[in-house]
Amino acid sequence: MNNVALIISTYDDSEDLWYPLEQTYQRHWKDIECPIYLCTNHKQFKSNLFHSLQIGTEISWSDNLQKSLKKITQDYVLLTFDDLFLTGTVDNSEIKKLMKYVIENDLNYLQFYRSISSGKRVDNKIFKKSNTAKYKNSTIWSFWKKKVLLELLDKNESSWEFEIIGNKRSFQLDNFYSTRSNIIPFMNGVIKGKWEPIYKKRLLKSGIKINDERQSLTNLQSVLYHFRDIQFDFLTYLIHKIY
Image (tube, rainbow, N blue to C red; front, side, top):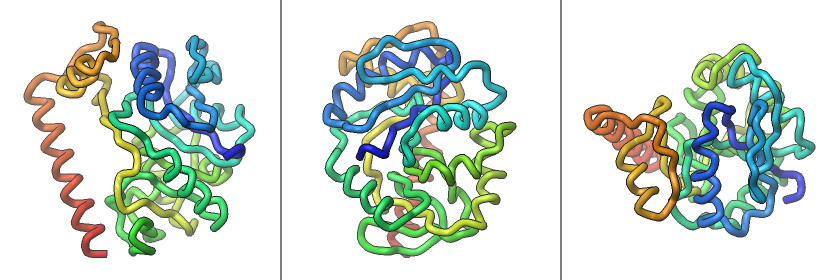
């Protein structure tokens, strides 16, 4: 996988997340072979695992990602975020098989996460998203042909705008897929800039060190988040059961 990189979308104000995130990778993805890049602005994170790209000042999430992608030489990227913490052993051999499938079949995109998009089953592992599906270009654990991702990004858009407005731009493109199960075990530790308290406790209990300056969600906010998460899981289960 010499032509693949893992890109972690982040920025300097999220510096407190880099160390606990790195600890989860060191613990759960020890055999990862591709380089891992942090999309930092001006700060450099001292790490033997994460490489800081230091793209400078940004005007948006998309601008940050565009500048980061242009600084690396690989033609394929696995995109993830600074608040998606690994919770279990990543099956690196399965990841490599899926990446190989994408490259050999000239796919534009494969999400390593069960999609809520409409589409059709290819086989027991792969699902093809409809060309005009919602969330066709969802960013969570998304494996991209880099030039396609660069074409779809608009430097003025936030990540939310990219998944809504940029999704419509993706309608002209074919070969967007997802896996039919969640391949990478993870938890979304930070919601709208605040720690999800249940997940924070889980990280601390496992021995992961966390800076305590960031606020946490209230109990009510946490309950509402998990309720929506359960709804999402149920809907994706139904979609992949039916199609």
